[in-house]
Length: 216
Image (cartoon, rainbow, N blue to C red; front, side, top):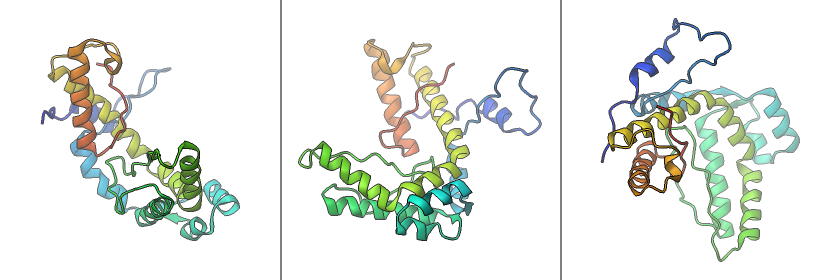
């Protein structure tokens, strides 16, 4: 498998330095970026933390959430164990309704589960969509929202890392500066993009997710 060397480590290092020079007035600082190795190293720390649920999220779940989610968040904190429990309960609800999901799930490097649920043809789009919404509202909606908010900084840095990974992979494949490679009609560019995308998704355990290519 073609895996590029750690992506733009110099830029990642500068972005992580506390005493890095401030960005000029009127410009945004560069986004933090984590290489695959850095993402994997940080992930256990992210999953081990106990997060405080923001008051607005607690109000929302206590007002509109199910008893299941209210009980999970009753003490005002959120852990990976609670997040996983809610996700697996949602998946069991889906299986009970006719949508096959894995009984166990592997969290991605984003510290999130792949939440994409394909609707089987035999259920039909309307019935399948209604089932997904019902199971989510019953078990996962507010827990997921709170978890995504708590882990957003990590996820954003990983996402930027995937974009730079893709850029480095395309350069290593001999494709440099291609405009919108995901939509390219050039067979060479399209093939290189597909190969790099598959490798990136497998390496980061992202399923079907992708986040584009960083500018060179």
